[in-house]
Length: 478
Image (cartoon, rainbow, N blue to C red):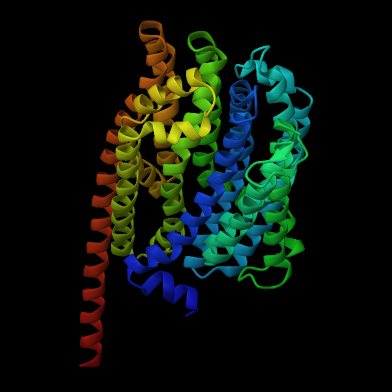
């Protein structure tokens, strides 16, 4: 038995959860800074910040598509690697790793060709106006150029964690986000805030350049992990040969987070186009800021998901169903505590969060604060909903995970966004989100309860088979 097998299969779940989740949470919180720091510095660019932040927000649907393909193979590969390692099939896990790398290479190049040749058309489709399209174009063009190494860096983060090295995964994210924080003010402003040192004064373009530079360093760190021989799984050139069966297994699990991102892209387009009608460029800027604030509280939950994935995947593959249930319950409680805490803070002190992102524009600040309070009315439920949906992905139930992932954004949120603003204007856009959070949580809870009953039945069957085997052994001994 390897140290990893002993850790995942036998260490008490609560300390194991913290051991795997805390590095992931730290990494995800730092990763959130990519978004938050960019938005903070962009929104405070003198004179044009309130329009520029809306333009950058327009690009969010495109980044969702990019991240969707990364998750399709990165998360799908990581989940399969965990399952294969739980079954003791190391060579198979390495074959999956090679196929993940090859598919990421193919898709990242293909997406860049498609998007870079149609930037303006895409931005108008996603709600850009004549006022903010220039800022959107300037930002997303450079983000697309850096997409190749960002794709590999993000995917390696998941795979490294799946093979049982959460600290390396955390460091990968810390390096990227830390570099971005340092470079943003230098690249964006002519004079670096607080330090009074000369900057490059590149504006929105500077924010994008800082981001892709930081992502490049994170990619190099992840590559070093495998090249240096420190990894448990080895990167072998022979495994780059694509295997249809392996790609199918990867996509079967990765399809759920993939469609979450694609649905997020569609939702973002609907949001931006609705805001263009009912809130204008100011509404689009407010939505970009609200997104950044929300991410601050959702990222810990996503980190818990990442920490739970190898624990749940390994123990489900090894038949330790009681440990699977225990891990999910701990995740549900922890995630709910985080999102409930976020709900309380936002409802009581919305001005504290908004004022840092919209210092000099009173109209933007007022609209953002009002929207934030309404958008996060059901935030306390979101943590449990995210953990529940991810659970099914971790145990290989791709279709159910896929359905639950789409339920919130496609089946509930998009219709609400198309209907409610017709009656309630801008408020209809804001209230569509808590409505979808509430209904999606109810749906996820129903399926989770049913799956827990199935796990109980499997555990009971295991116990009966064990007793039967012990009885046969005693008879043979006698």
